Amino acid sequence: MRKQLLAGNWKMNGSVSTIEAYFSDFRECLGLPISDVLKKVDICFAVPFTLLAKAKEVFKGTDVQVAAQNCHFEEKGAYTGEVSLGMLAELGINSSLVAHSERRQYYNETDQSTSHKVKCMLDKGFIPILCVGETQAEREQGLTNKVLESQLSAVFACIDKLDSVVIAYEPVWAIGTGLAATPELADEAHRFIREFAKKRFGGEAAAKLKILYGGSMKPENTDSLLAKEHIDGGLVGGASLKPSDFASMVKSAYQRA
Ligand code: 13P
Image: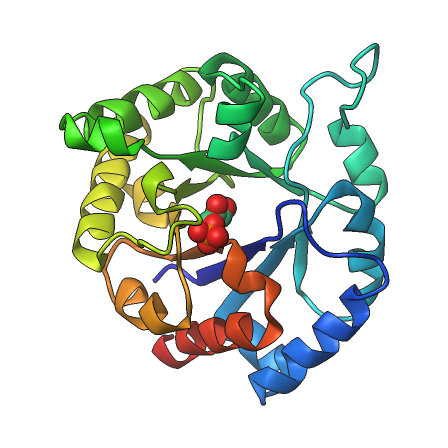
């Protein structure tokens, strides 16, 4: 059985001065020793670059994971504003989101740069959390599976095995809108992703693949989403900023495990 992963994507939120208090509130709201929870559920926080070092310090002594929200595929050079995998590794970070829809939308990230990043991450032993998903217009035109196929096939063409790749299905129309996908609709997309991965990498790799759901996930809908066969956790934006909400979502996953 796949271990569930609850990952908070803080986007451009959080601060060095408040992360310690966040974590202590989060632990208190869990109401259980975090080491017990982590035996059954993986927990990760994808925080801004400026918080990575502090987050590592605050979560030290626990198995809570810390991830970046972006990375560059080159090792170094004239790429103003970018951060390389080596720089992240120096901070003890070995995971990053890749191609979040906000990066695709506002920073013109393409399938090509995404593929390149995922390949470099796997080569360096990183865990890529690869984000895919369709827009409202694409869904309305019945193009959801085509979009997923094209986003995934670009990456799959560049890698030999799935290794540590985690996929986050994040329908763009559900992000930050309060309109989460229904569990049925999300599971259908997840099933499609798993089947697609199976064709390329075989049944065993596909069965192990973690596929997270993201888009207006909150305490009220976590249980019903996680109840679905192909939903292995969540990539949570807004609700992860509130320790009590995120703790309640992690507890839902824990109780299901
Ligand atoms: P919300 O949970 O705020 O909708 O954001 C989802 C998301 O983009 C996570 O990466």
